[in-house]
Length: 212
Image 1: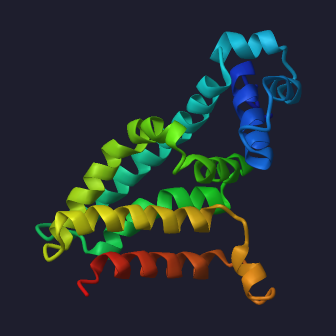
Image 2 (image 1 turned 120 degrees about the horizontal axis):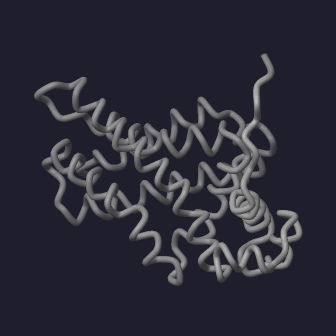
Image 3 (image 1 turned 90 degrees about the vertical axis):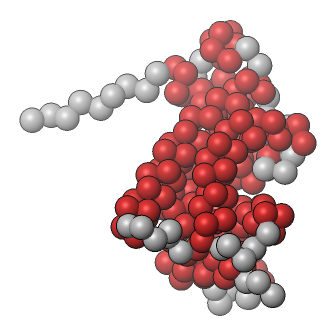
């Protein structure tokens, strides 16, 4: 039996082309004309769907952020169910936080790696801070609450700062720049996914847990 492949909509073509170009060249350097040409549509079609480049960026970030949010909360709930009356430990909590992003951005289809690069471009950009707050803060508060229960010796201020540091560490890992390859003279590589993730999870969990 022949399997029918779902045809990509014009809107999806535009989003995917924009992801690829913005990831490779940077948001400032990419024009709507370039995006339209790569997507094989007229600029008028792009304007019809998004009206501006920033609206297009918002849609790029929103569509994948929703997937990650759902997976993070599902994994956190599963960890809670597994532990019964006990709260998950910090490593289980951070695995639920990190894995949905890392697994897709390192091993998923190319759009996820492009998405990771765009996130890294804008995560600490003042122009996008409200958008990032809208997309990620509701789920972040669930994880901060879980950390608070798991690490009662930490102050609220420590928990919030360490959560922010955890995000920065994750972004470095998913950006795919292979900085470690250059730093090590080629001995190690960002492609060492399993080892890299194990170290990421250990580093973040230990850093949050430390009371020193």
